[in-house]
Image 1: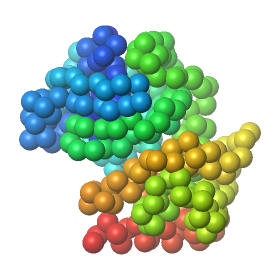
Image 2 (image 1 turned 90 degrees about the vertical axis):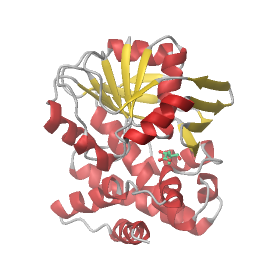
Image 3 (image 1 turned 30 degrees about the vertical axis):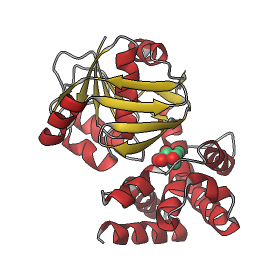
Image 4 (image 1 turned 180 degrees about the vertical axis):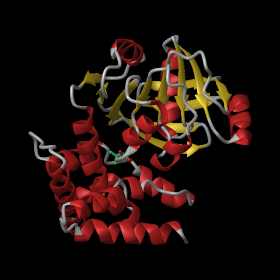
Length: 291
Ligand code: PAF
């Protein structure tokens, strides 16, 4: 199967390398020409508990027209700049809120699959990543797109995949978890595991998740399990992981705070719901981005 993986970050490298190892014809898409050239030459390296994958991939700056699936793993603020073919099925596994709405504005909803992944990956260097912990990848059709081919490719590549009838629900759940973990780790500079060990950080993370869950409820999303418990378990399961937001802050990159806390504050305002802690962490991370 011809697959384009869009985004050469930590998650993009993991998905591209594993899909290529399983026999898919994978092209990695990086909008930065010079970096794409370097990655073409160097290849991708994924270190993991289940061994190391070293692979050479085609790295190009535009999504090939003939691919059968495009997996979007770019940061939320880059989604609007994607150049996608509306006839190619597109699977978004990005962090944050608003990606699906942006993709719908670009290609419509008929070929859109959406969801989240709980794989934990740390970027070591350009094209070099460490797979810290395995986690489920959950996705479903946003409207009518068949899920079979993407499911087959991902399970064949060794991912643990669950289909969902409600991709909006899993995206909100992950966003609420990330809205708790990511800003707190980025502001305090700690690995995920310490969030459940330091009582003050744990409380702040819990409060942020509760604010997010209340906003999700205004959009009709209700969760069977406690999302606070999911966030705490995520911290334990990915204890050694440096969250994507802390990785971004350390590398001086723009973070996904606007698609997490910023979007939660914006949506809360529509229902006149107070989200004071979410607003403060959003404001502080915006300041860090400008350092
Ligand atoms: O963004 C991240 O880093 C991950 O989604 C998570 C779950 C916080 C693990 O590090």
